[in-house]
Image (cartoon, rainbow, N blue to C red; front, top):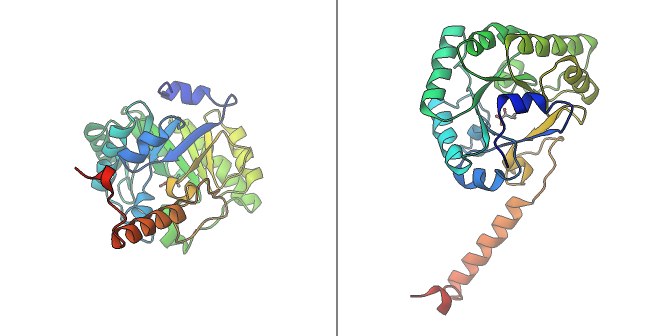
Length: 262
Ligand code: KIV
């Protein structure tokens, strides 16, 4: 697949829904590259890769390490690196850390969580040569301050504030926006309110593309499955039964056979 650019991503709006998948390593990135328009090195890796209970302890070094690994596996795929919690608290910090990502990885863009409240930071990054993907709605980095993962856009006020967020992030110069955990009709309205693509996760079918966390989508993450996840593979069961077979065959000396032996 031809590598997407900021321009082709923007132009895809209203044409074909964008396919975004998270990736954390070269092995899976290589498997995803054929179908993914965009790979997101999400800070969700702190949960499914590092085993933590939320994304908040992910570090910039961790994100840089995984972004480089993904880039090695998918050299021709548009790559977004998620900025972890605490790395974009103000314009100066955000720019310093985003420059570090751009200098130490081949990431095409970074993603930051937040709406109108982060618009000045997005504008500062964009005016300094950093391509920014916004992230509005349910913000995983706010899980502790909000006391859980809360679906957004349930009230008229919530709906209006999401539209304001999207417009502010667009005006600040972002090239696309991820919208998470939002009622489908509201997410569709948000997508219609801006000219840049709005990519949904748990936001229904009326947006400009979809993103899923790869380990949810392929059924490897067993802790919990959000309602919006469709499992395209029962990865955990397949791996467990393959490992059981290997273990049984080692114990019974069925493996290795002649063909596996020098
Ligand atoms: O970290 C992540 O994987 C994300 C997705 C949920 C969009 O931000």
